[in-house]
Image (tube, rainbow, N blue to C red):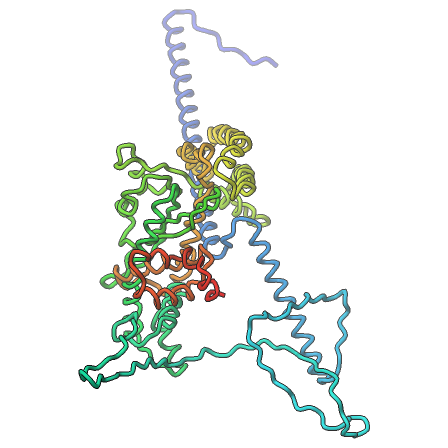
Length: 554
């Protein structure tokens, strides 16, 4: 059935009115359609924005959870740690069960454990340098079989047990005899030996123990005082504080020598860590800076060293003051306070910036690690691009591990041959992927961090002295970050500077393979009688080279 079509009017005026009506209807329909499309678009944008915000907040929560509860390792070491912990628990459980079985069966009973079920490691002999104390048990006086007293010795069986003797305190009495001259009646006496602290009563070894416990083991002085009191020695907190302050003043010349040595290097690692500083009614966020010289990665022969400094805040003027006369390479993160050091107009000249690939990799690794841990749970909105970025950066790190310790020329040649093509592919890949991402995406921010500083990131290709990461400085600050949980805050700015000086001495000794406790004890004993012009002989690397010092360290 065909619908009837209304006949059109015959006159022109009616046709014009009809056309005008149709035009108005079309316009109204088009306006309504556009309004509906705009409303749908606004709803889509609102939903997308809400989803992006939810994803961003969820990602932030996962990051905070990871920082609080996650492992700090960025490689397979965390898996090894877990396996070692599991092995430790299983070994302890097995030994506990065996011991319980022996106790239940009696001392003379034997417990059979299948060889395939548990294999013990071969026991190494106890160290030869430890003193031996012989405890001879009473010998039998008659034969256990027939009762005869005619016994002859065939030999002996020795069972060695490792034991420890608690710390022993002693008082050293230094006697200076006085003599009178019978001719002139004048008195002659040997001069008193030097003491680190005038009128003090703590010896060099005790002072070194106090310093090492406070700044290396992070035991506050009040806890040390309580521990000494339990051992029967009364050393009040005020006395220990006086000892620490006096030692810091005596050792300050060595700190200055280490600082000069660090800043004389071609390349320096720089970093900082927050340190709470006690203020009026609160704590403020102070900073502890570290600058590490370590030429061993490029075959340098100069000894490694670390210099630490303290400041009340993180303003850029502090690294500018620390490095005011330095003009080499600074390996650091992208902290804006370093920017003025790289300025071409800086006097005596700009410092060369070398970016840290570990910082850049960490931004991708966190995203990839969070995405991996979300398996089986509510998925996290993280792009798989992060995992690909980690894989590409790890390939560059693999080359660096192979050339570590080689000369700067050999490192540069290998980098130009193998690392340069990987860097070119990485840059092209990041530019391509970055163009597809929103500027609010987390992985895009990680890419921008590298692409905006690409010159600093690729500078290691042309200079074999530059390392791929700033891990040397981060390792120097690791102990301080752990110790904050013990000492909570620095009591004053002077106390922070004193701590920085002691961290300089202790970490430099560790970098050179020297026991800080032994070194400090010997230096405190000798420094007053040492010639000021030959003070460098007391630095850890020179101290360890002397034969008598090597014997003392052993």
